[in-house]
Image 1 (cartoon, rainbow, N blue to C red):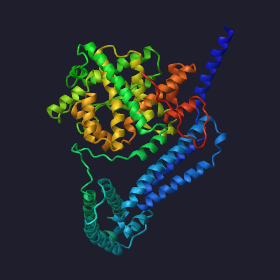
Image 2: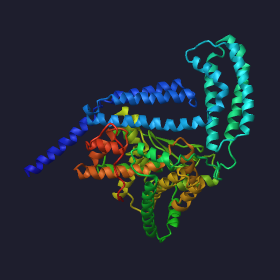
Image 3: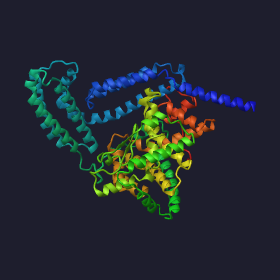
Image 4: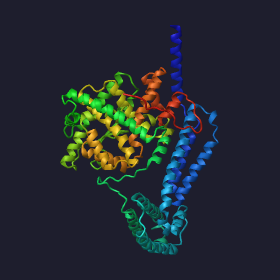
Length: 568
């Protein structure tokens, strides 16, 4: 008994020490802040982001930061400091890698901007307010306009190899046009001589730049297919970039291995959906059962109350089991908004963070789209996603990272962000949160959806699926309404979401689930684990594991944690 008591005291001391140390900033905190401040300073200075100057300056920036990190005494730091060192070095390398990909693409098309080299010097000198030779500048603008006409004729005879290259060329001109506008507006109206000489030549040049950019965008080989008929235009990044991106996110698997894992999880979900279908009396016809669930939608106008009821139910369930600390202020201050019809074209379901943003029919929608929005956001489909967006999901993440280790904001990654919220869907399923077959189907619908996201997003970027095939997969194999499936695919490939974002839900969830098991095996409680995660800030889950378990790290740490074992 005495020995057992000492063990408990020792364990409690270990946990207490971990919580106390987690509240302290590391030796690297100021350096992380400095790196982000440097990035901000460069962004506001070098606004022509498709120019040789931009790429050269940022290449030097990342090289300088690697030199600075090499001088840090890594071994002298605490585990918190070592973690932040690894995170910062990885962030520098990740941004340098992505910059390099963009730079290589730029070099293929940079000649489209040769006409404007003299004018670019004017844009550089504007940063320090140097008064331009207005007469000379007006002639340079006129000459550039004439050159653009000749350039268009020349490029007609040599279209780009594909539409992606044509897009890049167009971006070079649009970026130049943006920088020119900023410089012109700095002097226009303040410098009388500048205004008198330059106004008309600028207006002409600006029109020519617009026409040039539009021309270049469409000047590609007829053999390059831009639209498969879906109207969704995405840019596959290819296998090599996928593999490197995965390594930089601390995911030690190939795209093929991730697809295999997703397919295994997909099969498990389908099996569970059939079980729930049988409970409802539809036998193995899970699609009919899903149709039944879709028609449980609430009337227009009732969705906000339905969401609040689901929120209260999930919070009560979690607090009754003491799974995590939910601060009273967090419960008091989350907000609720309705999503516009336009935004629902790319976000047909909830969004979350400081507020939960609800998708439901709006006045502008036609009849069929209204029904699809209602059916796709029925209470049983929403049953697992309200807590995903609010507490303990994205809203709690936002609340806690604003208050703890906020300097780790640059280490944001979707595997931590979306993985945490998906992890809670898994945990709640295992704790029998869904009680009715309709609720089970609602939870399984979203889980199988996350599996499908891995499959279609990776295969798209590998060049193995088109956007239309992705839509068909979501409709035929997951059970989406067509408009919602279309919006989901559009969101995946035509917005600012990075290529790995969609697979990060399930894979991040797997990471948190595996880490939870390891920590519980070491004697932690679920609540201790969950609370500690929320005070450590954003970071890849593999590095969080190294922090919690005091695992060895080195300056050039690479991903190695094989987390994707069997899980249900």
